[in-house]
Amino acid sequence: MSNQSIRLQKFLADGGICSRRQAESLIEQGKVYVNGRKAVLGQKVTPGQDKVLYRGKEVQAEEVFTFLFNKPRGFLCNPDGRRDGETIYDAFPELRPYRVVLGLSRTASGLILLSNDGGFLQSLSSQQRYLPRIFRVRLQGSLDEKTFKRLGRGIRVDDRNVVLENLKLHKLDGEKHWYEFTLTDAKDQLVEKVFKTISRPVGRIIQIEVAGLRDDLLERGKGRPITPKERERLLSQAGVNS
Image (cartoon, rainbow, N blue to C red):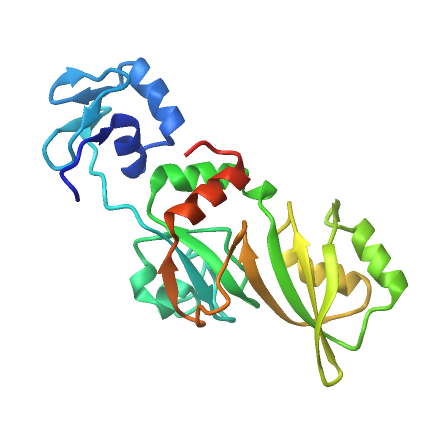
């Protein structure tokens, strides 16, 4: 951890206590102490030197890290309710300190976000239904113009209207057709249901872009840190002040 002073709100967020905005409220309510004294708004602390208490317990802020990871097919993102060997955390133990944001189902592959930044995670989790994702799906055969229009208007699935925006043919692979589209306010599990509704089972689902972030060169099973510019873009799409 760097010994550079940072705002107390950021320190609390990095420690996974709350978002930066929520931290302001906790400080105003007198629930945070720094070196034995009640904290004040605008105060800065030096990680590793200043002692910060919240509800009587010391807050330990970690080095925060957010990265893109290219998830292989066949693994769950959520460690809860699983058997050993089924999650990305089993296959890639180095991911265990991080939590998934905007994950994918077992049958899908592609880009996901992981982070140990508490404030960042809370901010994105509260806004993830508004963040766009771009998918590619592989179908047997082609879609006709009528089906294109229907998918563009939306298909009713699980009591919601799921719209495939900017739907287009990506490439041909023999008799198999790859289609690309943007999905917002929906999870990838609904993609299979949408195509099942029109009697077109999906062979493969790949998420190639998540909330405006994309990396076509990132290999399956590999990850990389997001850049400061990508972080700003992500927060901007979520409508969150950095």
